[in-house]
Amino acid sequence: MSGGPLAHGFDSYFGVDLPNYPPYCFITNDHTVDVPSVAAPMQKGGMNRPGPMVPGWNLTNILPEITLRAVQTIEEAAKSKKPFFLYFPLTAPHYPIVPATEFKGRSQAGDYGDFVAQVDATVGEVLRALARTGATNTLLVFTSDNGPEIVEIDPGAYDRIRRYGHRSMDGLRGVKRDIWEGGHRVPFLARWPGRIPSGAVSAETICEVDLMATCANLIGAQLPPDAGEDSYNILPHCWARN
Image (cartoon, rainbow, N blue to C red; front, side):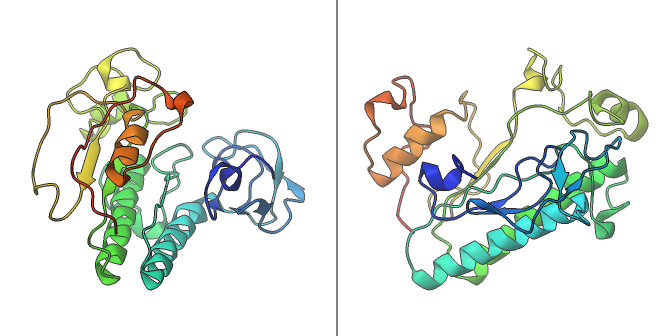
């Protein structure tokens, strides 16, 4: 499979294309894991795009497996004692909503709430791996790409408010695909022991496209001319290599 992460500067890759898009299989570096040799069954709440699938494919297993691989990556990096960069895009709480059995009922906010609880546990696994390996001098950023879903998920964000009192967009108006703030303002948490004070809050408006320029500044790298002249720093003067 050409044009993937290895073609854009990454040393290794493990994951899926998208959980609800084919091919329905894991991908390691630039090859599928096993052969997607059967047609995926189309089903509401699951795989909603036709395409090839590995026999026995289970959507619920995706998040636990990529979490395990992320932890292994941290552990391997710690052994080498070299700086590392891990980009770990979660498949939760994106559609399809498939919380693992041990999280069912944990949130009292339906399957979506349980999937969010599984996200919390996943972040906890990453934090424990950093602590366990001694990689404490590591900047960790946790964020999202858009507001909550109402089209593909049942119940959607508004119905969850009525049913469970769970307000995914907090006090903002709007959801994913809206122009209102609830569709675009998302959590942005940064943790860097000894560099970012615990509990610090910033009211500055930022955008995730600013991260590239920020990271370049932190490590003293020069961005290429076509990287975008309007990128600027959101975490200036606070980098020490791992």
